[in-house]
Image 1 (cartoon, rainbow, N blue to C red):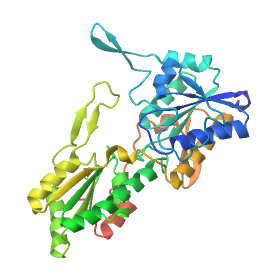
Image 2: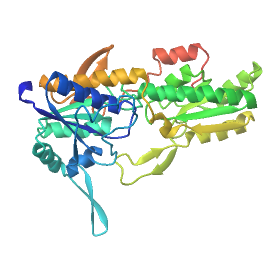
Image 3: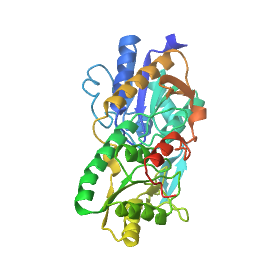
Image 4: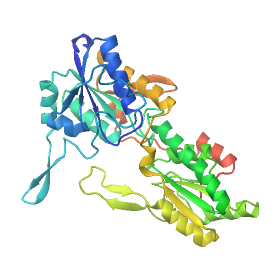
Length: 364
């Protein structure tokens, strides 16, 4: 089956992420140098697939992109060709226009697609595979919450950014005798908060998997004050929630596939703690800083491994799969098994136990 492949397409969807360009580069170089294939990219994610916006990917096009953040193909995290919005009589109606995408793939002479993205992007990838498109997925999300892979590229960079932020907050917190709350990304999974909290010497880590009691968080800070520490560092994932409440929603975006936007939990924790502990408290929301800039060396290498493996899977005829990292080795898993399966922090797992052992509180 593999020997019939002459031209492959690449698409990046969902939120941008450090390492996307490294995947594009590795896939393109492997396709050209190892297999003698042609490579084209679809611009702007699935929107570009719908509009037929292609760009030739050759050795010149990918030169110098290894350390670049973002994606040279650009992206869209609002476009779903299986539920595409149209305005009719002042109302928004949704239609399945995936056949247009299939037609554009065929008209471009593309034999197989590499689709790089998280759960939403790969869900559409699986749906295109069901329509007969030869698809291989690559797992991308800074949240590290995709199933059946140990690590997604972009996660290490996000943790590094959050850790550096904690290092900086430490010095100002200590100088002013303040509590500093750092809100990091992590809607449903607390991987960034957990890793950065341990690496950055946080005193409290609040994650979605372990609902917190604000009184217990305050107790930890009081305990530190008794020990002569008049400052504390709290890391909170945006999806963290109290035992008796729900997540903090910053806005609802109606035309988005994921309309609920979280944010503001850092400010809430800061206000609550200032009242309970009577220490000046400040909140910092790291937000999109975690997505931007150069990928770490680890993410560049992982992205390169994934990009190369995606082309190998295509040439082996193993379509409908996502490349993954399992036990340090590159592997793959069926897209059907990946979709909708979240990888969460285990509240009883080794890393949580490490954190507890060194005195970090989870507010429970």
